Image (cartoon, rainbow, N blue to C red; front, side, top):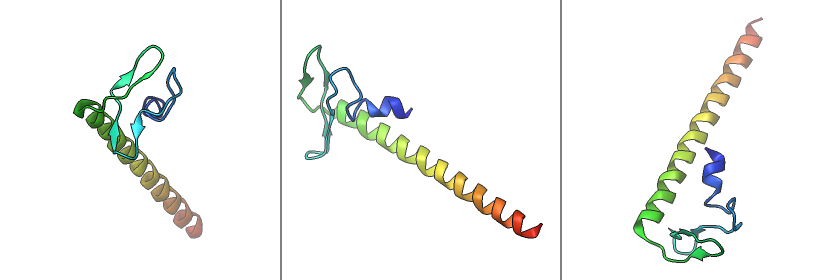
Length: 79
């Protein structure tokens, strides 16, 4: 999942960032040798949905890790 999201951040065949932090938009895609600089709604929504999915995934992953660590610490103290 992270590898797919990283496509927006430059892990693509042109090594170009597709997300534009200045506008909050996302370029429409990659041509063979250049970035399509149009910023349509579909591209921007695709980026935003991917970003929200990544945020939710990593938030849950961190929460699970913290809970597991807390559980292990409390059980070790009981021993």
